[in-house]
Length: 433
Image 1 (spheres, rainbow, N blue to C red):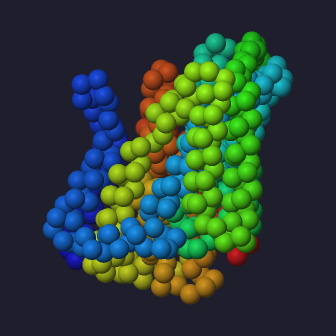
Image 2 (cartoon, rainbow, N blue to C red):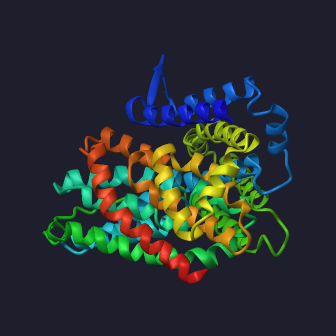
Image 3 (cartoon, helix red, strand yellow):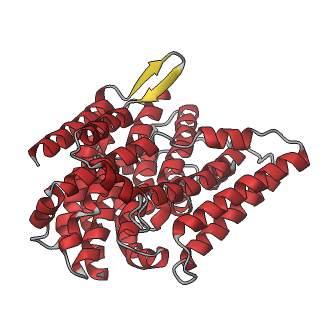
């Protein structure tokens, strides 16, 4: 037990340190993220020393249950390719430009429409895609308008990681925790809509309170014109996203697993895009760029963390930790514990670990613990950059566009916003369950 615990803790610590101090390395002309390499090394050591039995790892990888990480990865990547394709077509940038036209001649109007746009887009795509898309837009806009970008960037990041709670597809942590508990798409929505609304209202009010003085300053908006080049690609992408969301909603009633639905829609997108390319003779950039932008490091990272969790489970460590957490009210214990754990080991490994901890609880306590962990995994993302891969990408983008936002700044604003927000979200969950 002790060697497994030591290797796991060292791996988690090194992953955190790699995120803070050396997030990437350059090999020739290729730049690689380091966090997944550290996690992979820890997993290899556990397998090589038989602390994570290889037969158990393989059995879990092919198990016909909802916790199968391969199914979860297929579901996540299928939804991500649908979202990225729409971004490549230009839908998100078009909506962002359209939103700024609706803003009145002060920063509050712009703040309001950007927060609303981020929230709506996150509901139907994913937090990571929205952050990757809107962050550069906000940086460019603020620089041209000569205004402080922080109110808008903080609002965007917080909104993306709050409204991502509403649907099971909004965050890979939602997918892992909910599917491991056998929660359906519609069942998830019925429970999580109230905590999400509570959290969103409080979060919006807090950001408005922090920046209210400068948000009422005048602004000159030079409207940027942007046109979508291929309407046929837009119709294809939007249609399949809508179809996918509808089928995910009814998947439990028609006895289709969510990963099958999303994979079928992703394959349909690929085939449809290929046909459009052949018929219209247009360039292949949308397809090629979409596949290049997929978060491939998430595959070895999630699988490596899965191996570590298998080792912790096999050695009885997960059961011991679960017994300790299961002593209190699961909503608040698991909510705050997952919130803090996300900022120690990142929310993806936290979700993989926490998916097994409440299994000793009976219903409805078990479901309460799972939903509380979902809340912690999302809102924990904006306490520190370590909380989520979205935070790492966000910080990297700000550095690229020369926006000063240090680790201390991130944590300062994160503490002011995230702590009240998670408390209100957990209270909302308490009312629902």
